[in-house]
Image (cartoon, rainbow, N blue to C red; front, side, top):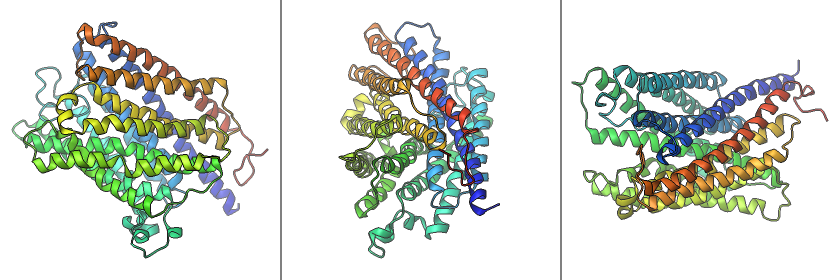
Length: 494
């Protein structure tokens, strides 16, 4: 058996794991969309849902959507990063196993024991629910989240290990030796390595913060005599949640860097401006969670000012170099558009537009009025759905094209259009609600707030139908890929 044949079999085995990641992630995202629709219908007065059930839906929707998107985005990063460094397949599988265990514990805690603190699990809410849930529900949720975090932490420690082994340090993985002039731009790390290094740094930090506050909450639930500073708990919680959620798009954007150049048949190499932008974003991403603390007057003033200023700056470095670079790669390239390239390109629009309401909300005087309104989910759904998720679904279509003979049809193109319109409409309904001062996280709405909620529910149905089309295409790919004839190098036979 030749080395090429062995590697081809290894690659197919690795792709099987990536496919599993995508199936699990896609299925959970689909179900979470249904919970989102149910919440909007309840807020719009079209569905009778008890407040207790609404907050259970809210908890599972936020937790599940971020967790599933992170899982799928991790598979995108792993798929491309393995081309440049030696990653551990065992760790990759272990993360999936721990993810599934954690998900089951969270689901049982939420629906069997009525745990409903939202994903933020702000101390001391897990232990002091006013009778809404008991100790078992809180512990199932908190331990489930901890197990999820441990799996991702192992994954990012492994990516860090592999990058350091290949390039010498995480700094060199970010291209600091090129920025300093010790190496030429021609020797800069590939974009997938640069983005993965950034994600490794910020997510190891975020997950350690999350593990710390989860463990403290667990001890407090078991022994209420153990207490800790609520402000510290809130800082740790948002340092975990905000950084981890933001990292999803930084993992998924690797698909943009790798796929668009292949479609456009043009190189897209890193230069000093690109490297500096990613280093700046690494620092900013670690610090800007403080814009979630702008309403906490007890926070140090310098941290609030930093949160506002760096939130303005964070959207610029990577976003500008990525969006501008994507436009230049496509411009007059003669690119052949399909669903994969279309979703990847549209994701740049979703990212750019989604950042704008976030920057507005990061202004202290605006934040005091808007942060606890639906303005925030308006920006976040645009950023995550039409930004990160469009990258993920684009990667799914790309993988199907690379690994099988299946081709998109008219229904897939309709799905692309429907998903784009659905996200724009849903996010628009949230932003309008925010402008009307409609509070977020409220189970019931007064009549004046119901219209946008119902409109958002209809938009959510359109999004869900479109995602179903994407999933059907991926199922067709999974069924076909096992019997597509291949030569010993693993290439499709024409």
